[in-house]
Structures are given as structure tokens and as C-alpha cells.
Length: 179
Image (cartoon, rainbow, N blue to C red):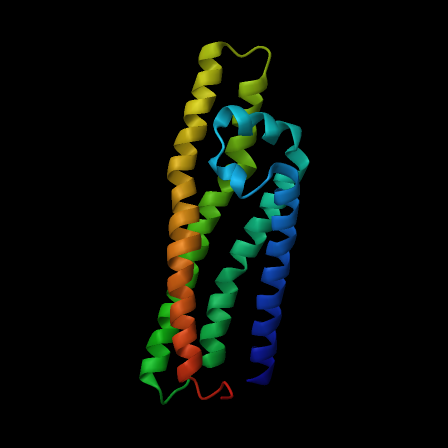
């Protein structure tokens, strides 16, 4: 199982490095994560102005979130023990919460890659009427209220915390991890 441990460790390190690069790009370009709470009138022009950084930062964040899917499965397989049903149940929960957390994060991130740039374009277009601009603002607020809460509150905060909790329990219970 040594190779499985190494592959799992490498995937965990890669996921964190990719996330840190995304965090740096988004933080230096649009003040992320604080900018998540800014009003549409402030963020939409920023998205248009920093479109390349926003796309590359969120794309990297998406990749790091997708990597959680194989990581959840790798962790489960690396730590599974045939004679420990409590540990195996905990590891199944680790994998399940990891998969759902990843899915919620992905839903939250995708809005920044596709919907938000389109809303920024409509909002800033010289051919857009005031009604179209207000519609862009309403859609921005709606997407943040829905996809943002799914991604940030459920995916990042709640399910990731549960994932880490079950993972911690599994690591403590595993005989494959040195004491």
C-alpha cells in the first residue's frame, strides 16, 4: 500500500498548491475572498477589468475542487482495513462527504467562470439599457444567494468540516498510520 499512500499524499499536496496559486491570483487581482461580499455595482466592473485573472484564478480553484473527488477515494482506499468495520464505515463517510463537498464547491465556482463575466459584459455595455443593467445586478445577487451559499457555506464550510472530522477520526483509528 506504500504506492497508494504516496499517490494520496501527492494528490493532497497538488490540490493545496493549486488552491494557493488560485487564492493568490484572485486575492491580488480582485481582493478575494472579501470581494465575495461586495455589491454587484462594484464587482461587475472589477470582473470585466480583471477578466483574465478572474478566469485563471477561478479555473485553478475549480481544478483544486475537482481534485477532491479522487482524493476522497484515494484516502478511503489507502486507509481501509478488512478487519475494522468502524474504520471502514468512517472512511466511506469521508469519501461521501468529500464527493458532495467537491460537488457543492464546483457549483459555486462555475458561476465565476461563465455567468458572472456575462453579467459584467451586460452591465458595462454601452448598448445596455438601465433595465438591462438592473437585471444584471438582480441576476448577480440571485446567483450569489444560490450558488454562492451552496459552494461557500455548504461545500467549503459545512461539508469540508465534516469531511475533515471523519478523516481525523479515521486517521486516529487506522493501524496503517504510525502513532
